[in-house]
Image (cartoon, rainbow, N blue to C red; front, side):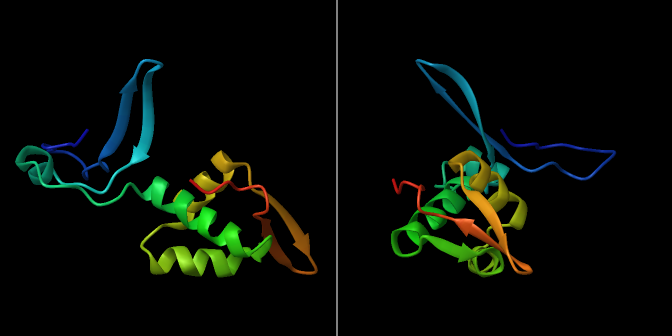
Length: 112
């Protein structure tokens, strides 16, 4: 879903959704323009899926990782901190504080 007109405020981000036999489901923000939707150009990867994929890849080699390191890696891939936090919550990643640093427990994240 992409906003194509707005006279009074800034444009909202495009949103993705899925329809299946189970019903309707929001997928979250999506990187696509109205021209891409109308022109049939393949969109960039959904940022939420990209964040989940990143966490899955990190889980393959790390059981626990410092949150700032994860945020830096995500930022390098164009994934925002908020999207990464949402992916963390959806995947059930637990956090713990050691001394003055936060760590993410990635050992239970299943890679797709």
